[in-house]
Image 1 (tube, rainbow, N blue to C red):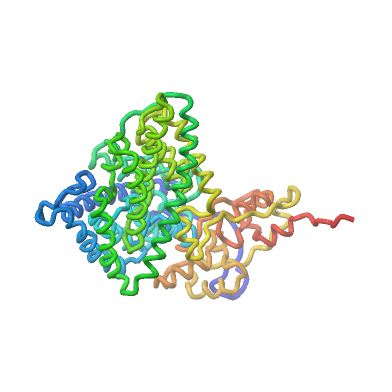
Image 2 (cartoon, one colour; image 1 turned 180 degrees about the horizontal axis):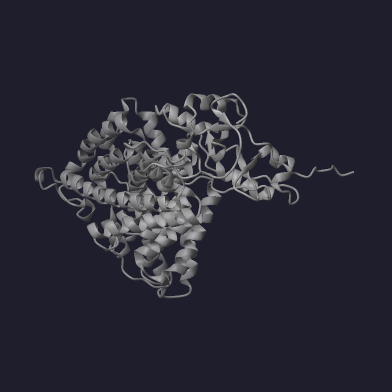
Length: 596
């Protein structure tokens, strides 16, 4: 072993050999073995399913306590059985009481639990290696259940995504899995939560893949499916197998309706973008007005929400009974439009005052109101057109697609709700148009705008196009000295501080084990894990690069790694023969000669 520095070794033979002790074998399997990841996906899925059951129970109990009914939206305007003398005026106090409970809870224990929940998970996956504070799960469950139970006009999808994701992150942190696997476990938790709470396993899978991971890699997809299936089985065992929203069967009655579905898609895309802008406009207004302590903001703001609920009690909580009534054609045109605008204001106000809840269910609510209203007009223009409820179903998916720009999730969840394949074609037509309109009107979605306002951009990084079919062996650099597997973390930090890209290989007795990054080491030190070893902080690279790999493919692997440099493996063995970074990629470019 050349060199005199104890923490450093050279050499690059084979890959990591399995540790000897039982505990180390379990941790090693979790970090690198395919079977370990399968087991963790099942565990996270089961945990997310159980959390979803508890979360829905909490919502029901808090709604029962604060409104006197299991779901107040089913009996809008009714008096609280415990306070009959107040009539519907108790609605002024329900959000205030709930705010007094969840305001301090969120402020003092987990401020990430405020708001939607989904943007925080997207940020954790994209920028923090999937790391989410473990207390977020419990705080989010209690805060969101209190908020919804007290009349907060928000959904339960955001909370359950954050709850399940926090569970997946906690499991990954306990076992100290690499960042790549940590992200997959976070997505598993999100998918499991959606699948169990909505009894929609397919929607859970595609929500996690399309919005959380933003990637459909085969291994990730398989693990997310396992988690969603496991959570769904647990959810159905505890809550029943009925879909969370019972909808009648609808079919397309006339070919001319496709024109109407297309027009509805365009309008729904505009409504989705409008909802996004109103949400953040009201949130900015609440920020500008409020001057008191943040923990008191939900209670004081709850009075304003109570006024809205007093005028439109149909907006209390998630509002699925009202949505079902709209689909069934029980509301007049004007009242549908009033409910549409009222839901925008009530949801935005709930989030703006510091409430905790999702925007997925409100998007479905608005889509149902818009679609039903549009269906009434369409039926008058084309007497042979189908009932308004058919348009309500299309509007539900289209408004969500316009706001979140998640067309696959929108199509899948509406298919799961209806179970009718005949609605797929008009649904896809409207959703694609709504997504396109949303993209044309704004570069942000209802989720990413929250992050961009904080200065965080989750765009996909562009890759460099190399000239010619150059192999990595022609441009790679020599392998830097490796970190010893048992080196002290403080020494590792010093070595990484001297590197150009904050990443170095790790070896034990000349055997290459993987790479360790400056981010992983700094996070371990900030968490107080000073006794951690480099082996425990290894970063799993999504794909390997060999010396005979073309530079174009190596750049894609480098992009996916989130590292500034990656090792190059021997084409003949598992040994490491070099180092590849973006400078190597630039060196592979053919010089561009100016025109003479």
